[in-house]
Amino acid sequence: MSDKDLMREYCINDVEVMRAAGRRMRDLTPEEWEEYHLTCRINQRGLPVDVPLCKAAVSRMDRSANEANDVIQKLTGGKMMKHTERKSRDAWLYPKLTPLQIKSITDERTGKRSLDKDRRAILIQTYGIDEDAKELLQAIDDAGSSALKKYAVALHTHIGGRVFNTFQFNGAGTGRFSGRGLQPHNMRRDAYSPEEAEALAQAVIAGEPIENVSNVMARLLRGMLLHEMGIYFVDWSSIEGRVAPWLANSSHGEARLELYRNKMDVYKVTAALMIYKNADYMDRVTPEDRQIGKIAELSLQFGGTKRALQSMAKKFDVHFSDAAAMGHVENWQRTNPWALDSWVAFEEGAKRAVMHPNTDFRVGRCTFRAYQLVEENFSRFLWLQLPSERILAYPMPRYGMVETPWGTSRKASFQTSLTPAKGEPPIRHVLRGSLLFQNATQAVAADCLRESLLCADSEGLDIVGHVHDEIIGLGPREDGERLNNIMLEQPWWADGLPLDTGGVSWGKRYGK
Image 1 (cartoon, rainbow, N blue to C red):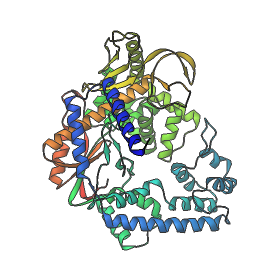
Image 2 (spheres, helix red, strand yellow; image 1 turned 30 degrees about the vertical axis):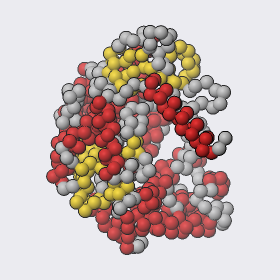
Image 3 (cartoon, rainbow, N blue to C red; image 1 turned 135 degrees about the vertical axis):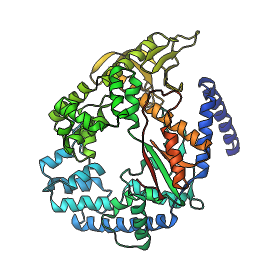
Image 4 (cartoon, rainbow, N blue to C red; image 1 turned 60 degrees about the vertical axis):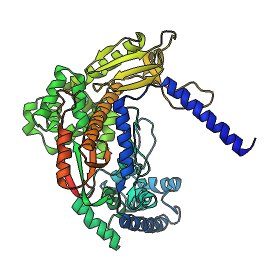
């Protein structure tokens, strides 16, 4: 068979597979088609990038990597030739670390050591670390990171100073968008302000010396986006922290929402409840206490354990012992009964829906329903309907014996779309209540974003991107104010959800 015939056969099979998939999947709603077409328009507008900065950044990072590798070779006596040689790195570095320092980079559950960027940062800042070890870790950072490759991506893919097709509609199962190519969702959040970014960008273009170049260039990534008319962006404040108790639709959830409605510092309130067991003691909350409240809020809302708390704490350069972490988890759960109640209710709702197909089961502000054809004895999907009436899908749900980390038990489970190893059964995951609650919360936050994007587009705003909970547009500050007002509007399905924003950020460069 010729190559032409093989290609023809492949194309025919491809169309047949797509038709079969289409027959089994539900159609998009008119609203979803509108959101999809808006994503296409945003991708066609493109993100404006500073091409001279990208050229200078790529050149700077290449030189920095070569210089860092020279340092690494001299420092290790030739035992390491490049920053990517992990086995040689570990053999040279670990003997120079104390047992406590080794513990800080070791996963207590698996016993495996890691020197990712977060743990390197912790070691570099550790008091009493061996100076040669510290210099090696700094050199590895200076040799570059995956984040810095975005300058090269922008440089090699831009057309006339714009990078196109960077957003993927429904990129995640919850309906959230994901990134492609330039991946704007992965840019550092601790970015410089537009004014700081402008000064640093000019310094990079001019070839001026910069200390800690790897960290500076990573923080400057957002500033790579440049437009003479101005770039504005608006983000929601604690969007998931507001959506989660609203979804619970309970008296405890309403009490949490009142904190947001009254413009209170939720992290301070959480700290007062966790540490002093009384919200009236907020005046006793120190900055360190508030940090504990913030870490707990960010890591425990969806069933996080002490390990989730410890992992989040490391990002803030905070360290908790196992006992302290367990205490914080218990205190947070005690003061947030709406969350525990939601995890239990969502798991029970999913189980009942799987056991009783084609019957609605209301949980909080969501509804579960297992979809089963009359002539079949199995459910094709478990639907989770959101307040917006959009649905999340969990394929091939079952209720029966499953293996969990804590032993065999009867649970509801669903089949993932991941391809198992050859000869292995399909991969299944337990429908945990905390996971379902997290999915619903992220999906509702995505619905807020979708609605605001459609409204902003209909108002004629030049929207060119969005990153999680913020929307990016081009134009004068006044356009940013219009966007801010749009994002403060309550969607038709979100009665009682107290939305708020951080206000408008505007400048020639995208920043914080």
